[in-house]
Image 1 (cartoon, helix red, strand yellow):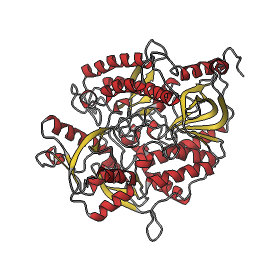
Image 2 (cartoon, one colour):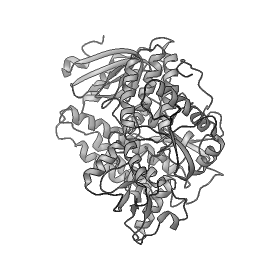
Image 3 (cartoon, rainbow, N blue to C red):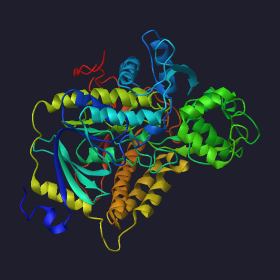
Image 4 (cartoon, rainbow, N blue to C red):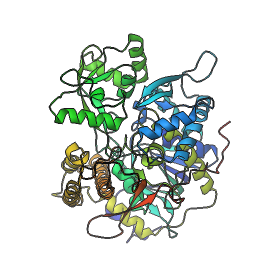
Length: 582
């Protein structure tokens, strides 16, 4: 127990809850709940901390039947060839092979746990083969994601996991050995601080969309990136945290890739198919569709509408079953978009449809900080989706596989002993920083700072069509944003959540622009007007960003690592086995 001088509780008068666990999972989406299920099955004590409600948080409940599901008899090589082309390089082919090859087994495993999935009359998993994102035929699992995520929560609880909803981690604790030792933060509905000691921490907190356009991404504010960077972990491929997915102008929507596969076509003001006009396959990879949409607007042929009139009625009904939340939202608009084409726009999704994130060293999600793992959208996905996007087919299977491997590895690590001790004074300082905005007089409001931040990251003229001059200007503007972050004021506990979200989102933007300045080529989501061509001679490399340990304002030092370097990524299957797969 810390002395009263270093312990914040007497001075601040805020109650503190303290727990000890083997594995702490931060995030309650697909990857986090799978990691909790696997670690619990392996005998570890598991605690899941979710910012919202575990099983209903983030992007996963909105995903629909968009999960890659390959069986042994499928042509894996053909899938890999198409996938690498659509992702414009930078993928680690062996890593993609591992994820794709295990996808069918993992979905069968979840189905055996009672997770609701559709089956064929003979009992096999029902799959749909669709042409999506420039790929000729992608086998995807038929599932309804809302019920699926609710069941995953029950699976984690059945494995013995303790789930703490409505909690915000403000800092990771590191021990005297430099390894992760737990986390501190607060639970905003109860107005209480917490400290959780853990031997292993799995970051499953999603990506960063800077409160972007699509349903489900409003809570993805880069917390996993900020927490990892401040604990000493590296970030990778952060220039690929800029993505825009076609979205209905009537409301924020998902599922357009499936609608395009079913017969939807994007047309300009003249009625022309914009993808045909730009020489792209239809459907096209998301980054190429975004470029075509923006070009049509800039050249005066907007608006762009999504013509869905050719989609058969039965396929429409199937889409509505796969995406129930989106279908209900569409119905509430009072417009039948399947009969009346309406404008669609590039909706900003940040890293969600991109690939940047916390750098992992292997498929188990180990980071450069001992005991810290990253999974799902929190992890850098460049090894599996390259410079493109895994949205609508690979992201869910990546979340499932990475959660499975990390849960097993974290449980194995936890068996090695207790977390290293931390300094009480360090914990006290962390709590003080967590509560600093609460009640601050005359400070800046988080909503105002977020608007300034969004003007930098969402505007495609600044963050899709990039140049050295524009990136340097954005980095200068971020200095002013950071000054406002240091003066944030929270009126209550819910406002305190927004303060910490904005802080992490600002750090993420800093890493993104810093990395984009280093990559001197155009590839995938990263476009440089001053380097307009793809350069495989010099840029078959990943960027790696590390937060500088000191300075008046935060800064990231960025270097690169070649894909061929053995230290870049270990794609061998993780050794940990917990006996959950057949």
